[in-house]
Each structure stands twice: as C-alpha cells, then as structure tokens.
Image 1: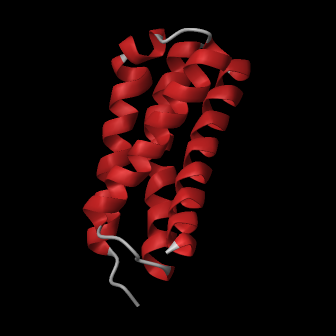
Image 2: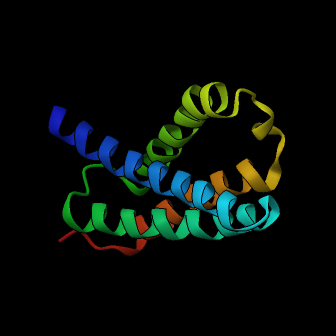
Length: 120
C-alpha cells in the first residue's frame, strides 16, 4: 500500500515540479502573459505524459481517482508552498489562465490518458 501511494505521489510531484519549472523559466525569458499561456499548454502535456507512464507501468488507481489525486497534489502544493512562500500571496488563485485553466487541463489530461491506456 505504501509503495502504491509513493508511486502516485512521486508522479504527481514530478508533474507539479515540471509545471513550476515552466513558470520559473518562462518568467525569466518572456512576459508573464506569455508564460501563463505556455504553462496552460505545457501542463496537460506534462501530466498526459506522466499519466501515460503511470498507467502503462502501475495502474494502481482508476483514471478518475488518478485525475483527482494528481490534481489534489498540484493544488495542495500550490496552496501550501507556492502561494505562501514563493509568491507571498494567494492572488494566483484569482487568475483563470494562471491557475484554474491549467488545473482543469491537468485533470482532463490525466483522466483521458488513463481511459486511453490499456493496463499491460
């Protein structure tokens, strides 16, 4: 059971970290508006690929459960780490493009990928 939880957490945290890197790098090379657009495109790609890896190799949870778990990890890390410590504000949660669209796309990419991958 602990191994299964760890596998889910690691996949979710890797996705969250890659999304954070997208924002971090984007902020240094382009405008914030462009960064948010790039992040909104990258987030479902990142989680689609991670979901494909997860469902191909492990498939411990259903697509719906996994989508909720991955999204929950991202939301908790954003609310518990990024907003209070990096941004020093919860204003990011007022941004549709910066937060809510990527959240919805992460959920959708994980769920759709999970439905498409046949356990093997």
